[in-house]
Length: 160
Image (cartoon, rainbow, N blue to C red; front, side, top):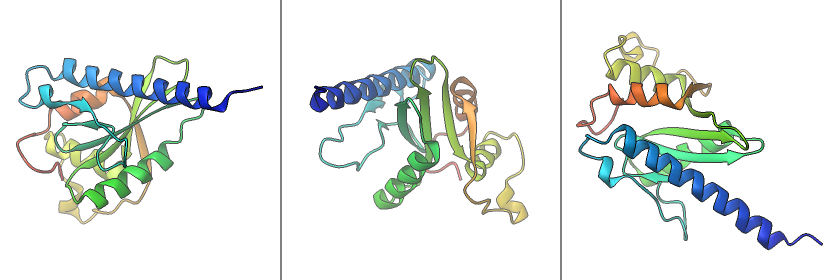
């Protein structure tokens, strides 16, 4: 007979370990930044009032490691959490498929364009009246996402 409690606990541990890995990756990649020492895995024992990875300015990182990850569903949850928290943060979903070493970041096209604009890579779409591009998600490998995020000005409240 399958012990569902053990399977659930093992799955949670697997997810928590992935969150710890992402915290470590943020800290290592941004070691010289003013905020890197503050990055930590948030305590979500009672409710999800914080992102999975807390302390990253301007971002709301949600993590998922699963056999069949659902970036759109996880992103929708992150958007709701950001709105509920009342913060100016870009929801980004960081996903690794089970038994894979590849990690990807998912965010909306509009948020990606805002980050590119904040990094000086292109004019803001907001300046051209294209502020709402809808829901399509873009997948970027995590090292590339880190490079893009590193180029943004973290002294501002929001990337947008």
